[in-house]
Image (cartoon, rainbow, N blue to C red; front, side, top):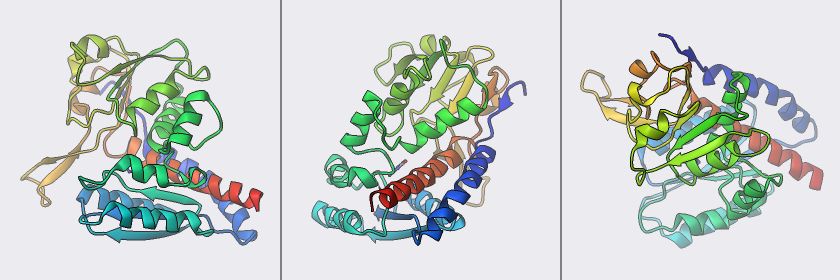
Length: 293
Ligand code: GUN
C-alpha cells in the first residue's frame, strides 16, 4: 500500500474532545445542547445513521430526542413535527433524516426547519449564506471533508479538485466550499451527464467521490499521488458475511490505494466526521441561543 490513510475516526475523536469543555460550560449555565431527530419510515441505512447520531450525542453529554413516523406519514404530519421542534426551546438542532418517502416533498419539509436550528445546513437560508460566505451552519459531510483535508496537510490552494457527484447534501456544497478563497482550489464537478469521467478524474490533485455508486473510481482513473476522499457508503450483497452484505465506498479502495498519495477508508473515513460536525453545529447553535437569551 502506498497511500497514506486519512483517519477520520481519529480526527472525529479529537474534534469531539474539543467540544467537551464547551458542552460543560453550557451545562454550568443550565443549558444542555439538544438535537431533535425526525425519522420517517424504516430504511435500514437511515435507521443506523440516526442511531449513530443519537449515541454520539449521549456520549458527549448532549440530549437527543427522536420522533419516528411510519413511511405512510403525510407531509402535513411531518411538517407538524418540524414545527414542534422549531418551537421547543430545549431543541437547538433539528434534523430530518433524508431521504423522505416518495410523494413527500423534501424541499417543502426542509424549508420548514428554522434556519437558527438547521444544524444540517440544508435550508435555503443557510445554503444562500454559505454561497455568499456569510456565517451559517455548514452541511456536515462537506464540512467534515474539508477539515480532514486541512488537518492532513493536503495543499488546496491552486490544486485541482474534482468532485464526482452533485447532490444537494454533498457534491454541490463541497464544490462551493472548495472554491472559497480560504481554500482556493480550482473545482470541476462531474455527474451522470459527464462524457468522459476518467478524463477529468485523472487530472485531479484532490478527487472526491460522492456519486453513490459502489466502487465507481478505479485505479486507472486516479493521478499518481492524488488525495482521494471517498464519501460513498454503499451496501453490497456479500453472502460470505453473516449479515449478507458489506459496506463499500465509491472508490475501489484496494486498487486505488496503490496509486493515490492519500485516501480515506470506508468505513472510518468521512462517516465519523459527518456525525462530529453535526455535534459541532448543535453545540454552536446552543451557544448562540444562550447568547440571544
Ligand atoms: N441522509 C444522508 N445524509 C444525511 C445528512 O447528512 N443529513 C440528513 N438529515 N439526512 C441525510
